[in-house]
Image (cartoon, rainbow, N blue to C red; front, side):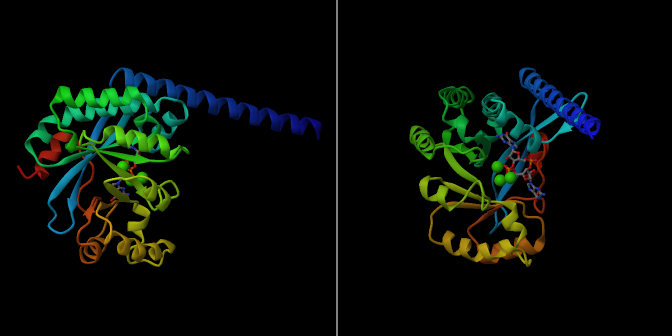
Length: 273
Ligand code: C2E
Ligand code: CA
Ligand code: CA
Ligand code: CA
């Protein structure tokens, strides 16, 4: 019995260490990818449901490591958040995405949505980077929407202060992943955001028997009374599109039914001008 528990203990220990060193190497590789500017962007269009006119694009980060291959943001963003690297990523994102999109933003009446963690927008370094990049690239604050989510618990007081700081710059805020545990009514009532992005899990429930379908009528009723931009994410089917067009005619839509996220060069095909 003793030797058995010894062997099990040994195995668990080895697995643990392997896992740890794997994570550390992924983290080191991510750090290097930021330093070497190897992270790049794809952009997904957002449309008015009414006329399918494009209103903006969302920048989504992509990372292909030379040895490991493609690593999704669902993997490396949480990793960066846990290890204090997210601040660097957010600065990288505002600098590079705004620079890359600057000509498009100047020539088209559309917005650029950028994903940022709450902890970052409250840092002075981030604000400085954002404002200096806008100035340098000659991009108006009105062209930028910061999409915030709350995965780590975070004081809303700090975010409120940050939003006040940005008032007057024209920069807008969107509450991302609305309807999930991380982003809910409590947040909406506390923060004066310009836009609400309804999570794909709610969009998925349209026309199904899923538990989330009960949330939908309430949300639709609520949106009629609040003057905010509402974007439904992850629209994949004609049925979902038609439902939203009929029931939430003022909303915007984003999803594979309309367009996947593509490199900037391919985006020109969907732009009006
Ligand atoms: P998100 O902000 O909710 O982004 C939407 C995700 O849904 C994207 O996944 C997008 O490709 C995917 N998507 C859009 N339409 C559809 C659809 O119709 N069907 C399906 N199945 N998926 C759809 P992606 O690019 O893998 O990003 C995942 C998450 O990683 C993002 O979720 C966001 O939270 C985070 N992320 C991505 N880029 C950044 C970034 O630059 N900074 C930060 N902090 N987070 C980022
Ligand atoms: Ca987002
Ligand atoms: Ca989202
Ligand atoms: Ca999401």
